[in-house]
Figure 1 (cartoon, rainbow, N blue to C red):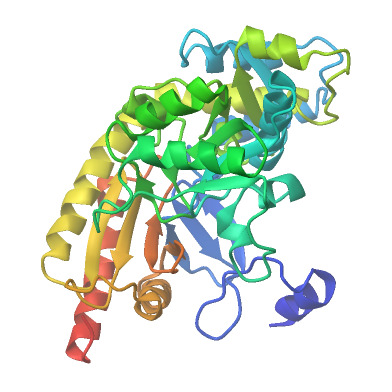
Figure 2: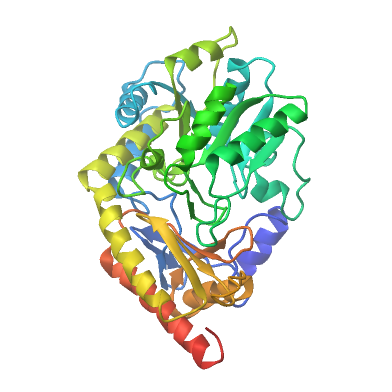
Length: 429
C-alpha cells in the first residue's frame, strides 16, 4: 500500500496501471519464462506480456546485454559488429526488397519514422489511411493515426487528413471487402483535397480486438493503395517475429509484402529497441541531405539484445512452439466455447488469440462488464493474468511469451472454465 501511494504521488495520474481486487496493482519483483512473482511470493502465469518474447529474463539475452553494457555501449556513429549482425539476421527473414534497416527505440518511434519516409517519398501527399481500432503509438503524430486513441476517452477525434477503413468483423460478417474499403479511403482523401502517402495496418489488429484479417484482404487493399501511389506499412510491433506460428511475419499469411516493416519491443526481449526495414529505393529517397541519427537507436547493447533474442528464438524453435501450443490452445478454447454462450468468438493465430465476450449468441452484443469480471477472477482466484482490449473492451487478450507450454495453455483454459462455471451457477453464462 505504501509503495502504491508513493507511485501515485510521483507518477502521472493517467499512467497505465493494472489494478485487481483491492484496488492495488500487483507488486511484481521477479520474472522467469512465462511466470511472474509477486513481492509476497505468489506466482502468476503471464498470458499477455508479448514484450518478453522468448521469456522473462531469459539468461542468454540478459547475459548478452549485461556483457555489452560492462564492455561498451555507444551509438551507431561508430562501427560495431553486433548492430550489423542483427540487421543482417533480421533482413534474412524478409522478402528480398526489404533490405535496409533503421534502428530506433520503440514501436512508436518506428511508426513515426515510417510516416516521415512515406511523406518524403511522395511529395505533396500528406494524408494517411489506417484501420478502425488501430493503435500505432503514443507520440503525437501517431495518436492522430490511432482510432483506438483519438476516438477514445480524452481523444480529439479523427483528424481531417486521416482516413479510416472499417475493421473487418468475420464474427458478424461485416466490412469484409478490402477493395471497397480502400477505395472509400482514397476517395475520402481526394474529397478533402489531399492524397494518401501511406496505409498503416497491423497485420493482426491488437488493440482493435485481436482481429485476424480475412484471407486476401490485404492483397485487395495493397493493390488499391499502390495504384494510388501510397506506401503500404506493415506494423508488426505486437504480432510479428514468429508469434503467428505458421509464419515468421504475419503479412506473409496474406501473401503480400509491405514497402515498410515496423517492429518493436519483442525483438530485444524487452530491451528498448526497434527496427524499421524498407527497400533501398525508399531509403535513398529518405536520404535527402538531412542526416539520420538516433542517440540510443542501434546502440551496441541493442545489437547484443537483438542478436541474442534472435538466436534463442531460432535455437529453441519458439516459432514452432507458438504453432503447436497455439493450435492446442485454440482447440481447447473452441471446445469451451460450446459450453458457454458468452464466448461469442474465439480467434487468433499461434500465440496471439482473442475471446470475444458477448451477452448472448443471437444479438452478439459486446459484454464489457463480464469480460472485466473474467479478467479479475482469473487473476485473483487462479493467478492467471489476461487482459481486455477491443473497441468495446470485451475481448480477452492472450499474448504470452513464446515459451508458453501446453501445460500453461491447459492452466489458462482450466482457470477460465472454472470462473465461467462459477458464474453460470450464479446466473452468469
